[in-house]
Length: 263
Image: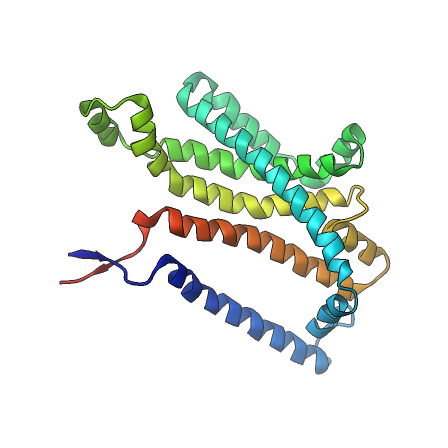
């Protein structure tokens, strides 16, 4: 028979995290050794040089990481609210399905690097531009996840709810939402790094603070360690957003955890 796996969700998350962490440490060590052995180009700094940027100027991180994280978070929340609402309408009112889905495709197809200067002209160079770009960059995965998720329940399950005389609210709570959660979590996980990249790209169009602004200033001043530090901060923000949702998913969709088959 099938029995639940013994490790808890937190233990499972920790067990699955040590391999990528060990790989990252090994790659950093190899890069450091390659740089000290003069095997890397001059414009590629050693990892220790990047870390020294943080050690020597810690405010460089605190003054730029926070603004980017905040703008990406606000844009992400706006995109989530709009995308989930629009996806729900598209599934509930079929006449709007094509227009909503196609509009999301069109918005997603526009390059962010081209959208940022246009919005900067319309909205100014304040944080509202970065928030808007973060929202536009992250809306499509959540829209698709909502639409596919709400359509995931098959006809037999719907018929069963009808036979049980379940109300629309009960059908939504006990069937549609549980069926939609795996798709929705896939969408929000993919959208989190997109929001970060959207905010950073928008900062190139004009921002005094932020990881994107720091990256741009470092490029113009040929400060390669600071450029790579910006890349590391971008990876931390994007990976952190993805990892947080992956952890929430592990705790929320408990019925999809692996089971252990025993005789």
